[in-house]
Length: 475
Image 1 (tube, rainbow, N blue to C red):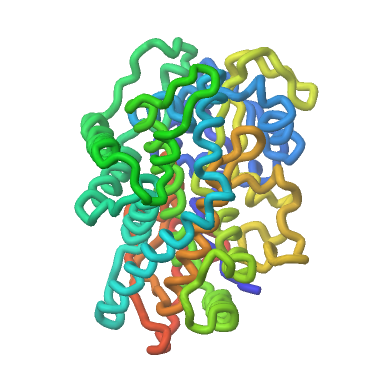
Image 2 (cartoon, one colour):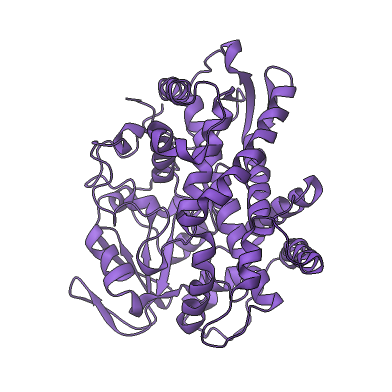
Protein backbone atom coordinates (compact mmCIF):
# COMPACT_ATOMS: atom_id res chain seq x y z
CA UNK A 1 0.00 0.00 0.00
CA UNK A 2 1.47 3.32 -1.09
CA UNK A 3 1.92 6.22 1.33
CA UNK A 4 2.18 8.73 -1.50
CA UNK A 5 -0.14 11.74 -1.25
CA UNK A 6 -0.32 13.35 -4.70
CA UNK A 7 -0.32 17.16 -5.00
CA UNK A 8 -3.41 19.29 -4.83
CA UNK A 9 -3.91 23.06 -4.53
CA UNK A 10 -4.08 24.57 -1.05
CA UNK A 11 -7.50 24.48 0.57
CA UNK A 12 -8.64 27.83 1.96
CA UNK A 13 -9.93 27.98 5.51
CA UNK A 14 -13.23 29.50 4.41
CA UNK A 15 -15.37 29.90 1.32
CA UNK A 16 -14.55 32.93 -0.80
CA UNK A 17 -17.16 35.66 -1.46
CA UNK A 18 -18.58 35.83 -4.99
CA UNK A 19 -15.97 38.06 -6.64
CA UNK A 20 -13.05 36.26 -5.02
CA UNK A 21 -14.55 32.91 -5.95
CA UNK A 22 -15.02 33.94 -9.59
CA UNK A 23 -11.47 35.31 -9.79
CA UNK A 24 -9.96 32.08 -8.45
CA UNK A 25 -12.26 29.85 -10.50
CA UNK A 26 -11.06 31.61 -13.65
CA UNK A 27 -7.49 30.78 -12.71
CA UNK A 28 -8.05 27.25 -11.43
CA UNK A 29 -11.42 25.79 -10.45
CA UNK A 30 -9.75 23.50 -7.89
CA UNK A 31 -8.60 26.42 -5.74
CA UNK A 32 -12.04 27.51 -4.57
CA UNK A 33 -12.87 24.55 -2.32
CA UNK A 34 -12.29 24.97 1.41
CA UNK A 35 -11.29 22.10 3.67
CA UNK A 36 -14.87 22.05 4.97
CA UNK A 37 -16.18 21.23 1.46
CA UNK A 38 -14.47 17.81 1.64
CA UNK A 39 -16.78 16.86 4.52
CA UNK A 40 -20.01 18.58 3.49
CA UNK A 41 -22.86 16.60 1.93
CA UNK A 42 -25.03 19.30 0.36
CA UNK A 43 -24.05 22.94 0.00
CA UNK A 44 -25.84 26.07 -1.14
CA UNK A 45 -24.45 29.46 -2.07
CA UNK A 46 -25.22 32.40 -4.32
CA UNK A 47 -22.82 33.66 -6.95
CA UNK A 48 -23.89 37.10 -8.16
CA UNK A 49 -27.59 36.61 -9.08
CA UNK A 50 -27.67 32.82 -9.40
CA UNK A 51 -28.21 30.20 -6.72
CA UNK A 52 -25.73 27.33 -6.77
CA UNK A 53 -26.22 23.93 -5.13
CA UNK A 54 -23.43 21.39 -4.66
CA UNK A 55 -24.43 17.71 -4.44
CA UNK A 56 -21.66 16.07 -2.44
CA UNK A 57 -23.17 12.81 -1.20
CA UNK A 58 -24.36 9.65 -2.96
CA UNK A 59 -28.04 10.37 -2.32
CA UNK A 60 -27.94 13.94 -3.66
CA UNK A 61 -25.92 12.90 -6.72
CA UNK A 62 -28.41 10.10 -7.37
CA UNK A 63 -31.33 12.53 -7.03
CA UNK A 64 -30.02 15.01 -9.61
CA UNK A 65 -28.24 12.74 -12.08
CA UNK A 66 -30.46 9.66 -11.97
CA UNK A 67 -33.88 9.57 -10.34
CA UNK A 68 -34.76 13.22 -11.17
CA UNK A 69 -32.50 13.61 -14.18
CA UNK A 70 -35.31 15.02 -16.39
CA UNK A 71 -35.42 18.16 -14.25
CA UNK A 72 -31.64 18.62 -14.48
CA UNK A 73 -30.67 17.25 -17.90
CA UNK A 74 -29.47 20.55 -19.35
CA UNK A 75 -25.76 21.31 -18.99
CA UNK A 76 -24.84 24.54 -17.24
CA UNK A 77 -24.84 27.79 -19.27
CA UNK A 78 -21.08 28.13 -18.76
CA UNK A 79 -20.41 24.66 -20.18
CA UNK A 80 -22.77 25.18 -23.11
CA UNK A 81 -21.36 28.59 -24.05
CA UNK A 82 -17.77 27.43 -23.58
CA UNK A 83 -18.13 24.39 -25.84
CA UNK A 84 -20.77 25.44 -28.37
CA UNK A 85 -18.25 27.02 -30.78
CA UNK A 86 -16.35 23.73 -30.90
CA UNK A 87 -19.10 21.09 -30.51
CA UNK A 88 -22.17 22.81 -31.96
CA UNK A 89 -25.18 20.71 -31.03
CA UNK A 90 -23.03 17.66 -30.27
CA UNK A 91 -24.06 15.02 -27.78
CA UNK A 92 -22.00 16.40 -24.88
CA UNK A 93 -23.86 19.72 -24.62
CA UNK A 94 -27.20 19.10 -26.35
CA UNK A 95 -30.32 18.24 -24.39
CA UNK A 96 -33.95 17.35 -24.88
CA UNK A 97 -35.00 15.75 -28.14
CA UNK A 98 -31.72 16.49 -29.93
CA UNK A 99 -29.76 14.69 -27.24
CA UNK A 100 -32.09 11.68 -27.20
CA UNK A 101 -31.95 11.24 -30.97
CA UNK A 102 -28.17 11.66 -31.16
CA UNK A 103 -27.61 9.29 -28.26
CA UNK A 104 -29.51 6.60 -30.15
CA UNK A 105 -27.24 7.12 -33.15
CA UNK A 106 -23.87 7.57 -31.42
CA UNK A 107 -24.23 5.20 -28.47
CA UNK A 108 -24.28 1.94 -30.46
CA UNK A 109 -21.23 2.76 -32.58
CA UNK A 110 -18.92 3.16 -29.56
CA UNK A 111 -20.64 0.51 -27.46
CA UNK A 112 -18.65 -2.07 -25.49
CA UNK A 113 -19.63 -4.65 -28.11
CA UNK A 114 -17.41 -2.82 -30.63
CA UNK A 115 -14.24 -3.26 -28.56
CA UNK A 116 -13.13 -6.47 -30.34
CA UNK A 117 -12.98 -4.37 -33.52
CA UNK A 118 -11.24 -1.38 -31.95
CA UNK A 119 -8.75 -3.02 -29.55
CA UNK A 120 -6.31 -4.29 -32.24
CA UNK A 121 -6.22 -0.81 -33.75
CA UNK A 122 -5.48 0.64 -30.31
CA UNK A 123 -2.64 -1.80 -29.65
CA UNK A 124 -1.03 -1.30 -33.06
CA UNK A 125 -1.00 2.45 -32.48
CA UNK A 126 0.40 2.12 -28.95
CA UNK A 127 3.19 -0.14 -30.24
CA UNK A 128 4.34 2.63 -32.57
CA UNK A 129 4.82 4.94 -29.58
CA UNK A 130 6.65 2.17 -27.72
CA UNK A 131 8.98 1.59 -30.67
CA UNK A 132 9.71 5.31 -30.96
CA UNK A 133 10.57 5.53 -27.26
CA UNK A 134 12.75 2.43 -27.55
CA UNK A 135 14.69 4.00 -30.43
CA UNK A 136 15.59 7.01 -28.29
CA UNK A 137 18.50 7.34 -25.93
CA UNK A 138 18.34 5.99 -22.40
CA UNK A 139 17.02 8.74 -20.14
CA UNK A 140 15.65 10.84 -23.01
CA UNK A 141 13.28 13.63 -21.99
CA UNK A 142 9.70 13.66 -23.25
CA UNK A 143 6.61 15.68 -22.50
CA UNK A 144 4.38 12.86 -21.24
CA UNK A 145 1.25 15.00 -21.53
CA UNK A 146 1.94 15.84 -25.18
CA UNK A 147 2.99 12.25 -25.95
CA UNK A 148 -0.21 10.83 -24.51
CA UNK A 149 -2.26 13.48 -26.29
CA UNK A 150 -0.79 12.56 -29.67
CA UNK A 151 -1.16 8.85 -28.95
CA UNK A 152 -4.82 9.12 -27.99
CA UNK A 153 -5.53 11.47 -30.89
CA UNK A 154 -4.07 8.90 -33.25
CA UNK A 155 -6.08 6.08 -31.66
CA UNK A 156 -9.29 8.08 -31.84
CA UNK A 157 -8.69 9.03 -35.44
CA UNK A 158 -7.90 5.50 -36.58
CA UNK A 159 -10.96 4.08 -34.85
CA UNK A 160 -13.28 6.96 -35.76
CA UNK A 161 -12.05 7.58 -39.27
CA UNK A 162 -10.35 4.32 -40.18
CA UNK A 163 -7.19 6.06 -41.33
CA UNK A 164 -3.96 7.40 -39.87
CA UNK A 165 -4.20 10.99 -38.74
CA UNK A 166 -0.52 11.55 -39.44
CA UNK A 167 2.01 13.47 -37.37
CA UNK A 168 1.32 17.00 -38.61
CA UNK A 169 -2.46 16.63 -38.43
CA UNK A 170 -2.26 14.93 -35.03
CA UNK A 171 -0.26 17.84 -33.65
CA UNK A 172 -2.76 20.25 -35.22
CA UNK A 173 -5.64 18.62 -33.33
CA UNK A 174 -3.68 18.30 -30.07
CA UNK A 175 -2.46 21.90 -30.19
CA UNK A 176 -5.93 23.08 -31.19
CA UNK A 177 -7.52 21.45 -28.14
CA UNK A 178 -4.76 22.80 -25.88
CA UNK A 179 -5.19 26.33 -27.21
CA UNK A 180 -8.97 26.10 -26.94
CA UNK A 181 -8.78 25.09 -23.28
CA UNK A 182 -6.28 27.82 -22.50
CA UNK A 183 -8.43 30.52 -24.12
CA UNK A 184 -11.96 29.47 -23.22
CA UNK A 185 -13.70 31.30 -20.39
CA UNK A 186 -13.87 29.42 -17.10
CA UNK A 187 -16.89 31.32 -15.83
CA UNK A 188 -19.95 32.83 -17.52
CA UNK A 189 -20.52 36.14 -15.79
CA UNK A 190 -23.58 36.97 -17.92
CA UNK A 191 -25.33 33.79 -16.80
CA UNK A 192 -24.33 34.35 -13.19
CA UNK A 193 -25.93 37.79 -13.48
CA UNK A 194 -29.13 36.11 -14.65
CA UNK A 195 -28.95 37.36 -18.24
CA UNK A 196 -30.50 35.22 -21.00
CA UNK A 197 -28.76 32.61 -23.12
CA UNK A 198 -29.39 34.44 -26.39
CA UNK A 199 -27.06 37.29 -25.47
CA UNK A 200 -23.75 36.73 -27.28
CA UNK A 201 -20.76 35.62 -25.23
CA UNK A 202 -17.42 37.15 -26.09
CA UNK A 203 -14.40 34.88 -26.22
CA UNK A 204 -10.72 35.65 -26.02
CA UNK A 205 -8.89 36.41 -29.27
CA UNK A 206 -7.55 33.22 -30.75
CA UNK A 207 -10.38 30.94 -29.61
CA UNK A 208 -11.99 30.96 -33.05
CA UNK A 209 -8.63 30.16 -34.64
CA UNK A 210 -8.16 27.19 -32.29
CA UNK A 211 -11.67 25.97 -33.11
CA UNK A 212 -11.09 26.40 -36.84
CA UNK A 213 -7.88 24.33 -36.65
CA UNK A 214 -9.79 21.40 -35.19
CA UNK A 215 -12.76 21.77 -37.54
CA UNK A 216 -10.48 21.94 -40.58
CA UNK A 217 -8.92 18.58 -39.75
CA UNK A 218 -12.29 16.95 -39.02
CA UNK A 219 -13.96 18.40 -42.12
CA UNK A 220 -11.05 17.28 -44.28
CA UNK A 221 -11.16 13.72 -43.00
CA UNK A 222 -14.94 13.50 -43.40
CA UNK A 223 -14.70 14.82 -46.96
CA UNK A 224 -11.89 12.39 -47.73
CA UNK A 225 -13.90 9.51 -46.31
CA UNK A 226 -16.89 10.42 -48.46
CA UNK A 227 -14.67 10.60 -51.55
CA UNK A 228 -13.20 7.18 -50.87
CA UNK A 229 -16.61 5.68 -50.18
CA UNK A 230 -17.12 2.46 -48.27
CA UNK A 231 -13.95 0.61 -47.26
CA UNK A 232 -13.09 -2.31 -45.08
CA UNK A 233 -11.61 0.00 -42.47
CA UNK A 234 -12.92 -0.40 -38.95
CA UNK A 235 -14.22 3.05 -38.08
CA UNK A 236 -16.84 4.83 -36.05
CA UNK A 237 -17.46 7.34 -38.79
CA UNK A 238 -18.36 4.53 -41.17
CA UNK A 239 -21.05 3.45 -38.74
CA UNK A 240 -22.20 7.05 -38.28
CA UNK A 241 -22.41 7.60 -42.03
CA UNK A 242 -24.62 4.53 -42.26
CA UNK A 243 -26.74 5.43 -39.24
CA UNK A 244 -30.29 6.54 -39.96
CA UNK A 245 -32.38 8.64 -37.59
CA UNK A 246 -35.36 6.38 -37.03
CA UNK A 247 -37.69 9.34 -36.52
CA UNK A 248 -36.71 11.36 -39.61
CA UNK A 249 -35.39 8.54 -41.80
CA UNK A 250 -32.42 10.76 -42.65
CA UNK A 251 -28.67 10.25 -42.07
CA UNK A 252 -26.55 12.78 -40.21
CA UNK A 253 -25.51 15.81 -42.26
CA UNK A 254 -21.87 16.84 -42.49
CA UNK A 255 -22.14 19.49 -39.75
CA UNK A 256 -23.88 17.13 -37.32
CA UNK A 257 -21.37 14.43 -38.21
CA UNK A 258 -18.49 16.79 -37.49
CA UNK A 259 -20.08 17.87 -34.20
CA UNK A 260 -20.38 14.28 -33.00
CA UNK A 261 -16.86 13.48 -34.22
CA UNK A 262 -15.61 16.50 -32.25
CA UNK A 263 -17.41 15.24 -29.13
CA UNK A 264 -15.83 11.80 -29.49
CA UNK A 265 -12.45 13.41 -30.14
CA UNK A 266 -12.70 15.60 -27.05
CA UNK A 267 -14.00 12.84 -24.80
CA UNK A 268 -11.77 10.08 -26.13
CA UNK A 269 -8.58 12.01 -26.80
CA UNK A 270 -8.35 14.81 -24.26
CA UNK A 271 -9.67 13.02 -21.19
CA UNK A 272 -7.82 9.75 -21.81
CA UNK A 273 -4.57 11.60 -22.50
CA UNK A 274 -4.88 13.44 -19.19
CA UNK A 275 -5.65 10.21 -17.33
CA UNK A 276 -2.58 8.48 -18.78
CA UNK A 277 -0.34 11.46 -18.06
CA UNK A 278 -1.51 11.51 -14.45
CA UNK A 279 -0.98 7.75 -14.18
CA UNK A 280 2.65 8.09 -15.36
CA UNK A 281 3.25 10.83 -12.81
CA UNK A 282 1.69 8.83 -9.96
CA UNK A 283 3.72 5.73 -10.83
CA UNK A 284 6.92 7.76 -10.92
CA UNK A 285 6.28 8.87 -7.34
CA UNK A 286 4.99 5.56 -5.94
CA UNK A 287 7.60 3.03 -7.02
CA UNK A 288 6.05 0.30 -4.85
CA UNK A 289 2.91 0.57 -7.00
CA UNK A 290 5.02 0.61 -10.16
CA UNK A 291 6.86 -2.55 -9.06
CA UNK A 292 3.58 -4.35 -8.51
CA UNK A 293 2.37 -3.19 -11.93
CA UNK A 294 5.52 -4.57 -13.59
CA UNK A 295 5.11 -7.87 -11.75
CA UNK A 296 1.53 -8.21 -13.02
CA UNK A 297 2.54 -7.40 -16.59
CA UNK A 298 5.36 -9.97 -16.48
CA UNK A 299 3.08 -12.63 -15.01
CA UNK A 300 0.03 -12.08 -17.22
CA UNK A 301 1.73 -11.19 -20.50
CA UNK A 302 5.13 -12.87 -20.26
CA UNK A 303 6.63 -10.35 -22.66
CA UNK A 304 3.97 -10.62 -25.38
CA UNK A 305 1.76 -7.79 -26.58
CA UNK A 306 -1.51 -7.44 -24.63
CA UNK A 307 -4.85 -8.09 -26.29
CA UNK A 308 -8.43 -7.33 -25.36
CA UNK A 309 -8.68 -10.83 -23.87
CA UNK A 310 -5.96 -9.91 -21.36
CA UNK A 311 -7.77 -6.85 -20.00
CA UNK A 312 -9.89 -8.77 -17.40
CA UNK A 313 -6.67 -10.36 -16.06
CA UNK A 314 -4.82 -7.03 -15.78
CA UNK A 315 -6.58 -6.30 -12.51
CA UNK A 316 -3.90 -4.15 -10.91
CA UNK A 317 -3.36 -2.20 -14.13
CA UNK A 318 -7.07 -1.42 -14.17
CA UNK A 319 -6.97 -0.50 -10.47
CA UNK A 320 -4.21 2.03 -11.18
CA UNK A 321 -6.32 3.65 -13.88
CA UNK A 322 -9.42 3.69 -11.66
CA UNK A 323 -7.49 5.22 -8.75
CA UNK A 324 -6.00 7.80 -11.10
CA UNK A 325 -9.53 8.68 -12.22
CA UNK A 326 -10.55 9.03 -8.58
CA UNK A 327 -7.73 11.40 -7.66
CA UNK A 328 -7.69 13.33 -10.92
CA UNK A 329 -11.10 13.01 -12.62
CA UNK A 330 -10.73 14.30 -16.20
CA UNK A 331 -13.87 16.42 -15.92
CA UNK A 332 -13.82 17.51 -12.27
CA UNK A 333 -17.14 19.38 -12.35
CA UNK A 334 -20.52 18.18 -13.63
CA UNK A 335 -22.83 21.19 -13.72
CA UNK A 336 -26.51 21.27 -14.65
CA UNK A 337 -29.26 23.87 -14.81
CA UNK A 338 -32.59 23.26 -13.08
CA UNK A 339 -35.31 23.26 -15.74
CA UNK A 340 -38.13 23.56 -13.21
CA UNK A 341 -38.66 24.20 -9.52
CA UNK A 342 -37.33 21.22 -7.59
CA UNK A 343 -36.22 20.25 -4.11
CA UNK A 344 -33.25 18.27 -2.82
CA UNK A 345 -33.27 16.90 0.72
CA UNK A 346 -36.33 19.07 1.32
CA UNK A 347 -34.51 22.24 0.33
CA UNK A 348 -36.15 24.29 -2.48
CA UNK A 349 -34.13 24.48 -5.71
CA UNK A 350 -35.65 27.19 -7.92
CA UNK A 351 -35.82 26.90 -11.69
CA UNK A 352 -32.65 28.29 -13.26
CA UNK A 353 -30.40 27.35 -10.35
CA UNK A 354 -27.02 25.77 -11.03
CA UNK A 355 -26.76 22.28 -9.56
CA UNK A 356 -23.39 20.57 -9.49
CA UNK A 357 -21.72 17.33 -8.62
CA UNK A 358 -17.99 17.84 -8.26
CA UNK A 359 -15.96 14.64 -8.69
CA UNK A 360 -12.91 16.48 -7.34
CA UNK A 361 -14.77 16.85 -4.04
CA UNK A 362 -16.75 13.64 -3.72
CA UNK A 363 -13.81 11.46 -4.83
CA UNK A 364 -11.78 12.89 -1.93
CA UNK A 365 -14.63 13.11 0.57
CA UNK A 366 -13.35 12.45 4.07
CA UNK A 367 -16.57 10.77 5.23
CA UNK A 368 -16.77 8.41 2.25
CA UNK A 369 -13.21 7.23 1.54
CA UNK A 370 -10.40 5.84 3.68
CA UNK A 371 -7.26 7.97 3.31
CA UNK A 372 -8.94 9.93 0.50
CA UNK A 373 -5.89 11.94 -0.56
CA UNK A 374 -3.56 8.90 -0.80
CA UNK A 375 -2.73 7.03 -4.00
CA UNK A 376 -3.93 3.49 -3.25
CA UNK A 377 -4.89 1.42 -6.31
CA UNK A 378 -5.51 -1.56 -4.01
CA UNK A 379 -8.87 -0.07 -3.05
CA UNK A 380 -10.15 -0.98 -6.55
CA UNK A 381 -8.95 -4.59 -6.63
CA UNK A 382 -11.57 -7.36 -6.65
CA UNK A 383 -12.71 -8.05 -3.09
CA UNK A 384 -11.48 -4.68 -1.77
CA UNK A 385 -13.77 -1.97 -0.44
CA UNK A 386 -13.81 -0.11 -3.76
CA UNK A 387 -16.07 2.88 -4.16
CA UNK A 388 -18.52 3.41 -1.28
CA UNK A 389 -21.30 3.88 -3.84
CA UNK A 390 -21.55 4.13 -7.62
CA UNK A 391 -22.84 7.65 -6.94
CA UNK A 392 -19.65 8.52 -5.05
CA UNK A 393 -17.35 7.54 -7.93
CA UNK A 394 -18.34 9.43 -11.05
CA UNK A 395 -15.33 10.03 -13.34
CA UNK A 396 -17.55 9.32 -16.37
CA UNK A 397 -20.64 11.05 -14.90
CA UNK A 398 -23.62 8.87 -13.94
CA UNK A 399 -27.25 8.26 -14.86
CA UNK A 400 -28.77 8.56 -18.35
CA UNK A 401 -25.99 10.95 -19.43
CA UNK A 402 -23.13 8.71 -18.37
CA UNK A 403 -20.31 8.87 -20.92
CA UNK A 404 -21.17 6.70 -23.92
CA UNK A 405 -17.47 5.99 -24.44
CA UNK A 406 -16.79 4.74 -20.90
CA UNK A 407 -15.72 1.23 -21.94
CA UNK A 408 -13.74 2.56 -24.90
CA UNK A 409 -11.76 5.01 -22.76
CA UNK A 410 -11.14 2.60 -19.90
CA UNK A 411 -9.95 -0.16 -22.25
CA UNK A 412 -7.76 2.28 -24.18
CA UNK A 413 -6.14 3.45 -20.93
CA UNK A 414 -5.48 -0.08 -19.65
CA UNK A 415 -3.98 -1.26 -22.94
CA UNK A 416 -1.85 1.89 -23.27
CA UNK A 417 -0.42 1.65 -19.77
CA UNK A 418 0.18 -2.11 -20.02
CA UNK A 419 1.85 -1.98 -23.43
CA UNK A 420 4.15 0.94 -22.65
CA UNK A 421 5.00 -0.04 -19.05
CA UNK A 422 6.19 -3.44 -20.26
CA UNK A 423 9.31 -1.74 -21.62
CA UNK A 424 9.81 1.54 -19.77
CA UNK A 425 9.62 3.44 -16.53
CA UNK A 426 9.05 7.18 -16.63
CA UNK A 427 10.60 9.50 -14.05
CA UNK A 428 9.61 13.09 -13.41
CA UNK A 429 12.26 15.53 -14.60
CA UNK A 430 14.22 16.68 -11.52
CA UNK A 431 13.08 20.06 -10.32
CA UNK A 432 9.74 20.03 -12.13
CA UNK A 433 6.75 20.80 -9.92
CA UNK A 434 3.40 19.27 -10.86
CA UNK A 435 0.34 21.40 -10.25
CA UNK A 436 -3.21 20.19 -11.00
CA UNK A 437 -4.96 22.79 -13.13
CA UNK A 438 -8.62 22.67 -14.12
CA UNK A 439 -9.96 24.46 -17.12
CA UNK A 440 -12.42 22.41 -19.15
CA UNK A 441 -10.53 19.29 -18.07
CA UNK A 442 -8.04 18.50 -15.32
CA UNK A 443 -4.42 18.59 -16.47
CA UNK A 444 -1.01 18.33 -14.75
CA UNK A 445 -0.17 21.85 -15.90
CA UNK A 446 0.71 22.75 -19.47
CA UNK A 447 3.36 20.04 -19.80
CA UNK A 448 4.74 17.02 -17.93
CA UNK A 449 8.48 16.59 -18.59
CA UNK A 450 9.60 13.04 -17.81
CA UNK A 451 12.66 10.89 -18.49
CA UNK A 452 12.28 7.55 -20.29
CA UNK A 453 14.22 4.63 -18.76
CA UNK A 454 14.20 1.14 -20.16
CA UNK A 455 13.13 -1.38 -17.58
CA UNK A 456 16.17 -3.56 -18.31
CA UNK A 457 18.37 -0.62 -17.38
CA UNK A 458 16.93 -0.61 -13.84
CA UNK A 459 16.18 3.06 -13.77
CA UNK A 460 17.14 4.83 -10.55
CA UNK A 461 14.26 5.82 -8.32
CA UNK A 462 13.86 9.58 -8.22
CA UNK A 463 12.82 11.25 -4.96
CA UNK A 464 9.15 11.97 -4.67
CA UNK A 465 8.02 15.28 -6.08
CA UNK A 466 6.91 18.08 -3.82
CA UNK A 467 3.39 19.44 -4.07
CA UNK A 468 2.94 22.47 -6.23
CA UNK A 469 1.29 24.70 -3.70
CA UNK A 470 0.93 23.91 -0.08
CA UNK A 471 -0.33 20.32 0.03
CA UNK A 472 -0.04 19.79 3.82
CA UNK A 473 0.87 16.10 3.54
CA UNK A 474 3.93 16.53 1.37
CA UNK A 475 6.10 18.90 3.42
